Image (cartoon, rainbow over all chains, first blue to last red; front, side, top):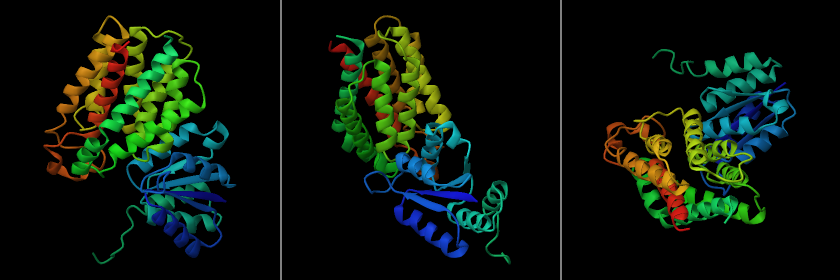
Length: 131
Length: 207
């Protein structure tokens, strides 16, 4: 199964997304990394690396919120050992909707490409169909 | 004095500069960013000093690598991965060098710049630290003489570069959401880049 790491500047956002996905998707390996190393708003590459390494999934997708979360994720990718790095993909998707689509798709046992596609499609999916 | 100790002294001077200018950097960042650049840089360099005290580095490259890891781990904002990458690239350039020549220093600055550009995908004119670092690397490459003179030339160019960000509209980071409202403010990252290079130059000049 595909595992998911959610990165946000805010621990509450990261934890909230994980809570939402677990509720909607059920059995899925997902972990949130929010806030900086002091517990404030920001990003923490060391914890991101540990979170990625903690997952047992064969493929790991990382969804990030904004700015330094993306820069940090890219930096972490370079810090991983080659065998872990090849399992990891950063996904260019809105973090809440992307994690939700990705999690539900992953819970069906879909492969990593399908999960990436589901997360990426969340960018253009309309919420107000009559708009 | 050996090159390793000289590098440690540079980092100490940089840390002191981040402490001294913490409030000003945060003020600049409050105007167009999220108001934590001074605090973040101070926290990062404090962690860098702690790391250097805990494990004695035995080459200039080792010192820069330790600083890089501390900045990536502790800064908490975009400056962490960006400056972390800069120090890491400089460390790679200086690997195995026991003595640092002016040419080595200029090459390290150039590679640091290239690393930051690649990481942040920013160019000159985007109102970022690149506006200070790119002219700094060019000035360093054009400067002959001592390592101190190379850093002084780089710092002077970085100061002009940081000043040049004032009228710009930002194309990267939080300030890019502000449009024209970012105009009239100096980019905090460009200013901290100048401060770091100036600290390096002052440290070398004081020997």
